[in-house]
Picture 1: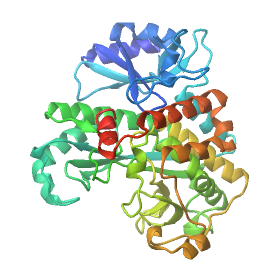
Picture 2: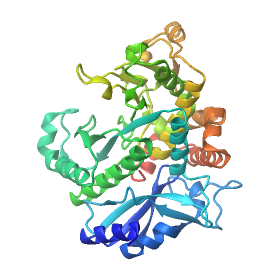
Picture 3: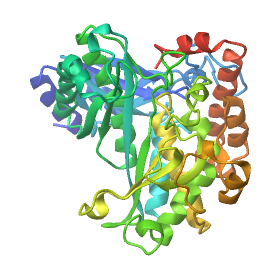
Picture 4: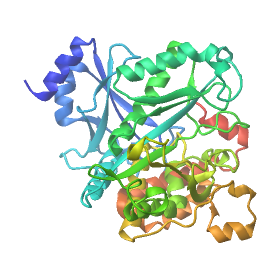
Length: 443
């Protein structure tokens, strides 16, 4: 019996009848092809067809038009990763598997985001390094039944406790380790944080968490949105990424003599991420609505700076509580949102960090306050800059990033730029409320 046949036997015994094979496009939308469970061995070998046109899809399902992208002809093969196939606890009868994309002859597809993560992970491994990464997932539901009590308020659990328990139970049944789950700032807004994993695992988990939240929400008669903003006046849903750098069993953000225990390598990696944040914003904030959320003084990380536990800095350093040791020291990148393709994002973060390591960069002086309150002289003294306040500005930074161009490769880099420019044109001239409503239920 082959490995795929053993997977089929196990899932059949658990009541699974169909498998959702998913990938995420350049606009950050999760797309799917589904197959009957019995077809899984063949699909694991040969894949299931998907058009290369998905590279040019926008958030509204229209397609960008550019040479080399969005072709209506040709085919790709989605090959499910059987190591990550998961029975969906909140959708009886279904399993889910993330897919790598290949050409019809089995060659790696240069536009595949999961394969991009693999390349970047191997580039770190070539230096004797590994990464641990994890996402915070924020979402909003539209329902008066979950209350509009105080931000982070215990009172809101009286309305939402049963709902959050079902989310927690479903994630736990799927093997996802939950660290925190609670009401967030806005009415009807919640957050779940999951444990750190290898980069590819973290990105897979981000996709699985969002789908699980949607399924549980539907069972409760709710509709979940992961859009950057769900109301014109709200603070929106962030997509913070936590990361740490390791050499074997040592956390390089904890065992050194640099700032707060960073080693020279760990500091250089974070300095590389910090340097590339203007370009990375085009990756992690992919829609014009993202820049309506990325505003100062709302914990969105709108300024390129770093600081210990500074929630207004784009790069927040975290040491953990006394006695936790090196397992908890990490950096949180706060400026991204839930519209981002998690694979593209973690791969790009690794690329930026490795470039900083290769150039032995050092972090600037840390900043411990809200940069929005500082005058121009103080901002200049600390080297603090406002991150892009529009998608078009972020795209200009991405275009100029030799680091990300080299890491992604010409095909993937060009596809991302094509989609970002098209999203800018799609939303040009729209009022704030109209733009927010246009993406509210797309993510």
